[in-house]
Amino acid sequence: MTGPGVATAQWRALDREGEDKCRLSHAGDGWLLVGHARFRDAAGFAALDYVLRCDEGWRTLSADIAGTHDDFEVQLRVVRDGARWWLNDVPQDEVEGAVDLDLSFTPATNLMPLRRLLVTDQSSQDVAAAWLPYPETVLRRLDQIYERTGLPDVISYSARQTDFATRLSFDRSGFVTFYPDHWEGEIRYED
Image (cartoon, rainbow, N blue to C red; front, side, top):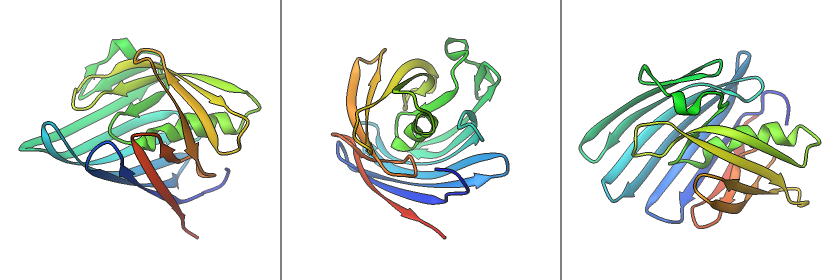
């Protein structure tokens, strides 16, 4: 899992009408995720585009989320500067020290902690994430654990604040291919 590694994931939602497509590419000294999530929830139809920038160690630098949800325009800008986070220029003190951004509407953001764990010999990784529980527009702390299962393409995932736990299947890109009851997807590689 080194090198430029350009891959595109396409997911189908299992818990609602929806889909998401995300492209991973190497960008300068880091990584870029560019995605397009389309889904229907209790508030209506959402069409959200997202761009997430990471450093070469897979730590989030910034993200932009834009689109529409029902009749409302969505424009969110998330920035991490060292230990501090901002959402639309408003400090998000609750998530100080987090290194990952977790966007609740896409499985794409599981990629960063998976990539970091898979290049180590560690059996697990505790992650402090800045979680955007969309449609809320605030960042909340989400303490997560990614743990090896002994299977080459399955990881145990849990989140402390939500008492959520599951097993995620993934492929060599680090993209999730199966998120039980939520997402299933396929990964395509580019030359």
